[in-house]
Image (cartoon, rainbow, N blue to C red; front, side, top):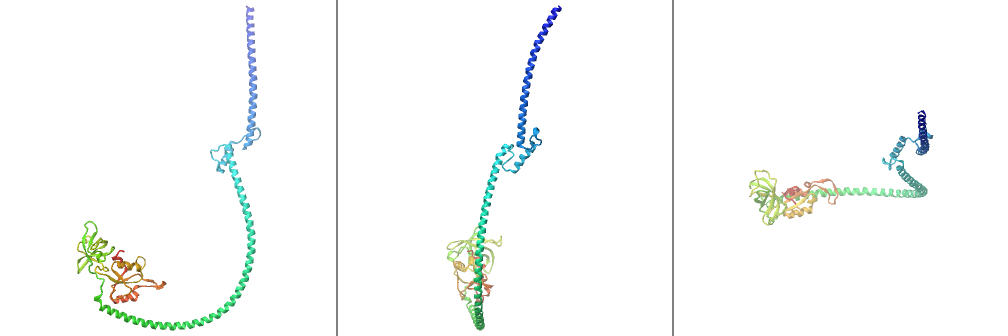
Length: 404
């Protein structure tokens, strides 16, 4: 049994030895493999460290040197931001040096081109300045020559002036003597003119007195600008401010003629409204009624029409005194008055009905401005018209009774 037991143990030990030997061999192989992998890892790490060191040395922004050389990312990002802040073409989208390099090179090339252009402009400016300096030297030389010539010319002119001054002084003395003689002649002529003017005024006064006497004697023959009715209202619209009157083209009525519409009796009339002719037929006309005085006293059939300048049965004669300009210049006003039966005369006579007064006269007969305007009422013809009982009508009255 012991032998068997010992044999069994020996066999077990032998089997354990064979098994242990196989594990040891596997372990040795695993060790060898691990050592090989460690060697490769160390070589890879060394290569990576070398590349990191080289990259950090290329990029910069490192603190330590040697094996510990490594770029400071914060400093690098600050540098990138500095580039973005100082270069317009670099934006926040450019996050790497690779993205920035092309734009930096382009902007650098543009700056170099601008510098080259500036240097070329500078060289051109320097060349122009050199040319200008040469021209200035030439101009200065020419100027000196001109100045010398002018000085010589001025000396000649001064000599001629001195000679001419002596001659003119002699002529002036002679002229002054002649002026004194002429002043004496003018004084004599003025005295003669004053005497003639006094005689003329005396004659004018005599004529004015005769005209006044003749005007008074012929007053019944004169056709005055009366205030008697010129016509009547035929019909008035019930809905619109319109009406019809018994005057038409056969009565020399024209568009724009205005009448005072008066009510009451012939002996005592009152203003009710105004009427303006807007349509003319042969024997009647349509009028526009406006400016009614009393809403409770409307225009009705039979009311009277009054225009002191208009005469349905004939015409009037008038003269114009004063200044007439613009729409109412003398020629224009003469034509307008002729359309309404008023003939403009060249002078005052016994057939004159109106004296139409314009603005003050600002110029003399030759067109030169007067020192003081002349009022129409200061003119002799105005005073003669007053003496002859001719009706004085301001231009504003013509404008009031006629819309041209």
